[in-house]
Amino acid sequence: MAAATLSSRVMGMVREMVYSGFMGDNWVASAFVLAFSIPNLFRRLLGEGALTAAFIPIFKEKERTGEEAEMWRATNAVISGLVAAATVLTCVAILVITVALHVGAFDQATFLMLRLTRVMFPYMLLICLTAIFMGILNARGHFFIPASGALIMNVVMIASVIFLAPHVGRTLPTQIFGLAIGVLIAGVAQAAFQIPTLRSEGFRYRWVSPWNDATVRRCVRQMIPGAIGVAAFQLNVVLVQGVAFLMVDKTINASFRYSIGLMELPQGVFGISLATYLLPTLSGLAAEKNYPEFRSTLNQGVNYLVFVNLLASILLLILAVPIIRLLFEHGRFDEGSTHRAAFALRFLAPGLLAFSLANIFARAFYALGDTRTPMKISVFCIGVNILFALVFVWTMRQGGLGLANSVSAWANASLLFYALRRKLGKLDLDVLKQVLTGFGAAALVAASTAWTLAYYWDKLLGHAKVWQRLGHVFVPMTLASAAYLMIALWFEIPQATELIETVMARLPRKKPSAD
Image (tube, rainbow, N blue to C red):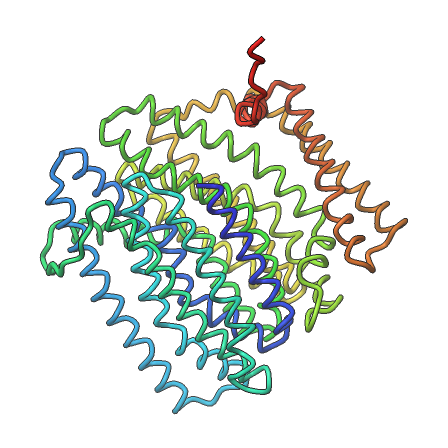
């Protein structure tokens, strides 16, 4: 799961690199970022969140009863309802935007943003289909193919910059529509990529009326509050982007978006992939009422998440400027753009662990059939996010948006943990408590190593050439990671030991001689 997600997230980072050189971080880029974030929010809500969180427990429940015909009938009913609802919503959104464009008086950035949103909004329907396909495959034990679908999507979006945008117009405000068209093509490709594996599992789509269907009603009841609960991070990002774009500065969103892209790499590779894997696993244990194993599995997932994403958070914080300079500084993305995006990343990085923990804790609630508790907590945290954004964005700009997201993420994770502990009695996190000293020591050594090496590399060798930029990132990153692992092994942190054992077990071994 993590390997497939890593491939797609790396390609997503390549897409951001191509985007940065093509459009920089100006007002056109900010308009595109906000326009794309609106339909893309549904991917976050559905593809990585609420729909699968609501559907998978129901699907696994029917699968365990052995009623395969009913399982596929219910699946078709959910898909039929999804297509009908998404089609209506898409048509209404396009109609409202069209009327607004004809009767409203907007500045050029807002006018462009609305036009781009109108073009890309059908992506919502395509990604909803992809979401339900991914949920089915995850429930049937397939994780690599669904996670790889995003790889196809990113390849198509990169191709749209290279081959489509230059033929759409001569100026950036017109060429940007090539990227919008590419988003729609990518949505079709990602949905179609799932179909062969679905068919191999025995799925055949048939229209089943969703009206008054018991499974659809149950799924909708759980999905609506779940949409808010599991996607608090994405909702927060879109809300603060809207605040910044409409109230403060038309250019803030683009540089903030590049920092978000860097955050999503470790969050997606380990945080979301782990949460996606845990949902059907925890759902199955909850259906069997095997709560000791439920707690143990959740505990193991949390421990691994802290071990991996704590290091990622440190590296993003310390190496923000070198990483962004290496990845994005070319074309229309200049040195000033680098420092603006790095400023936002420094305030986002401390929230990485909280974003990922909130995903796992929310899915634990969904596996238990509780979607309302995460929703209530997320609504409160969204308010916290907006409040902090309104206070700090005026003076800290991109950094203020990052700070608001990090504060609300830690509030979200903390409240979810407290509520889950009350619900389960205890979470068996004793192992994590025992190694907190080791985690702290490893984090301190890794941060010191990364900062010292990055400082002296830039002072002695600079960053003018590509090899210097590569070294400025990977030398501190590699040695800091090695130091982190060594300290973790010294403190006998179980996750470090198991990681080494897993790697060693997969290394090819020389066969013993016949002599």
